[in-house]
Image 1 (cartoon, helix red, strand yellow):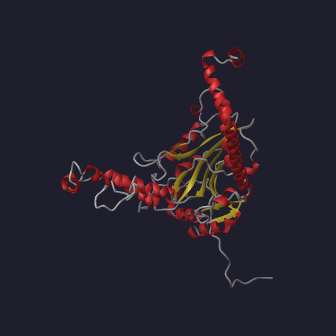
Image 2 (cartoon, helix red, strand yellow):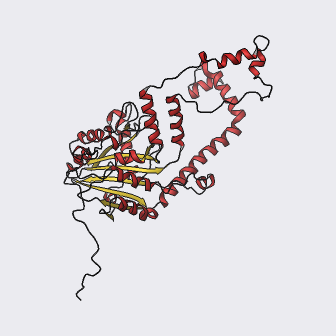
Image 3 (tube, one colour):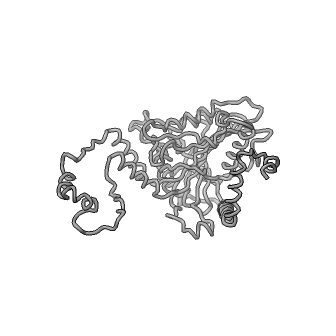
Length: 434
């Protein structure tokens, strides 16, 4: 038998006893293991089916938003629009609705698209929330134009990369815990208009330099989320400030009201319970904690983030160009520069998500080019179908308004399409010539 296993499966003679033991164990438990494996596969397949059924029934409308030429609204106005996008949140989907009806939290996509030197702001929103989001935009930008636009993705190939086009890109995620904030627009604002820093300016200037078939897509997908990250933030604040959380450990034994604890009763033959109590309450034994100034500042920053509503945010960049065109890595470098202005050393920062980046250094080993092309294909498909990332980061409305907002008047990029004149309804007493 040993010679047969060695010749058939190439098992070394030294491992044959181990193989026999494994076979004996499997022979004893296969009738339990196989159904469990089958149920696990069926459960995961069912969840995938429910997800794609929900996605296929989620009908989107693409709205183009043109801001006024003399816009003076800062990112604070965009914060209110993101707050309105949180309205569809269900505060927790019930188990039956989630795993039988396939219900999920609906999402929206804010997009900035550049082609032939022109930049356009889009909002891809479920059809039933269109009026709500239009009202949110007009409430902050009364002179803006919001129109239903033709989907620019319909003119693109069904599959990329192909023989004509290639693409590069990545998704951004938080480097540290979700409750730690990035640098927000409040750090860039100034009461004097000339000193304001427009964080979108560099990205828009990069987009204005694109010519021919070059395209740059910037997508921020928002899925409303609840208070889980807030609770984690509260624990982090308590740890930084060295504050007791009030969570008491459960006793291992039933508590008896004997006037002394179980530990004191066990030590009673050797130590009077009163001595232990005096030692416990002795002021010399109490430690005085001094909170460092930087820990206090970090705790305040965390508190500010968890105090505002938040989303599971997918931040995605895609750059497309002709396959035979010379590579222009400076565009991707400009995107990295745009993102890094929001990074801090002591709190949080955004970084490319390694499994999604198409940079050559991110893939090593065999079949490198094939695996890179597969990443490019997945990135394109996720963008086209407006799919949230599996490992999205939690960003609150202040952080979202920082990384995506309509530019202020200080941005002089001429290629950004804007509303040139104000439109309004005619006067009620205007004479009509028949």
